[in-house]
Length: 90
Image (cartoon, rainbow, N blue to C red):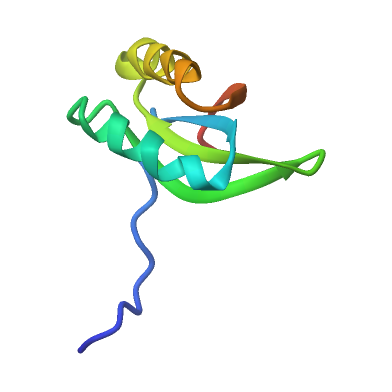
């Protein structure tokens, strides 16, 4: 079986990063829900730590940002969702 030796291409220039504070075990639930909206965002397993809390990275486009944020906020009915931060991809 071949291994990937190449880097994956970077996200498009107009992509936005949404960082969401949540528990690691809830990441899969978030990913499954986002996948149900066919292409509004891409949930990544990458995270950053802010004050000891994990914020997971989600990539979305400017046209899908409002829907992505609405879906994430709605998940607060089912799981812990803390800080939500939107940043431009560097």
